[in-house]
Length: 405
Image 1 (cartoon, rainbow, N blue to C red):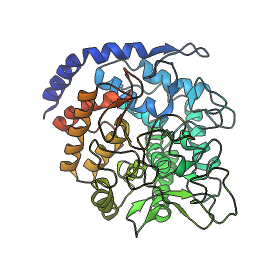
Image 2 (tube, helix red, strand yellow):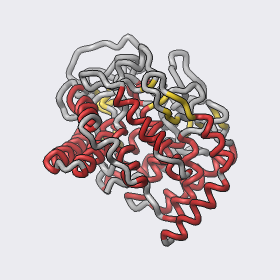
Image 3 (cartoon, rainbow, N blue to C red):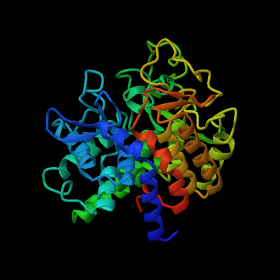
């Protein structure tokens, strides 16, 4: 499809989504500390980290101005502590406070540079050093054992709130998340592009090298050749410790280098271009398309059905939203993009169809039941779930808005 036809298709889609556009306007709020307006999908006004990246894509497709996207990034940077730490939500709280903002800010800045042509807001002597400090906090201060992989502080920190079996509870910090480290690969590549635009080619080369090294560590340390799957790493490997939490502590012993819980998080290795072609093949054929694991009636389940924690109901110790027998649009979207980049275009098209049909059928909801397709969580929801409406457009135009090349 040529660019003129693509523009026409997008304009027609925007017109068709006028109700969603009106819904989104309910998500514009003002940060009390900075006075900046921002957009969030949450009626309770919280600005979250990775949500903001996917919400930025929705705003771009909807034809919104760049203001709320830029302000969202700037608000986080304005709340940075001298150490480089930025709490993962605004406003923050005692639980989110020690948990560093997920590594998506540079990727958002690249979206703004590419689709609005605006860089001065981020490439200046006030903001750019803060952006580098935030990335360096992830790369160095959150790599507690120095093995080249960073750690989540808890399951809520991952964004997959109740996947405690792989990432623990508040301040546990034992999970070298495969998702986290894939996000960091992409974030380093995005920051390198910004550094190049800033005129610092040496710095750009440094972060390209950091991305390459981290991708290699993921392949070396988090891949299980027997299972054909990427797992999170156990940062406490080799240490003697006991978990105070029943259920996951017995599994994550000091003798286990990998946390053998199959989560949708593993497929970020496709989106980040980390997996080899052979690894990607095994991930897709043996696990993604396996109806006993991730390919549920309404795919893709957040947790494999083969896991004993797979449940449509909250368990007594669960926190936050359901990331077990539930389907989320942003993870479907990342998998969709990863499938296409590895050449699994037909499977990606099937996933796009299922995802779009799910949202059209159940409405704009926060997440969905992977077994029944029922809409769950916030109702209505005007955040990242709206991505599903644009999958047919991406199919038509062969457009990858998330590409970093």
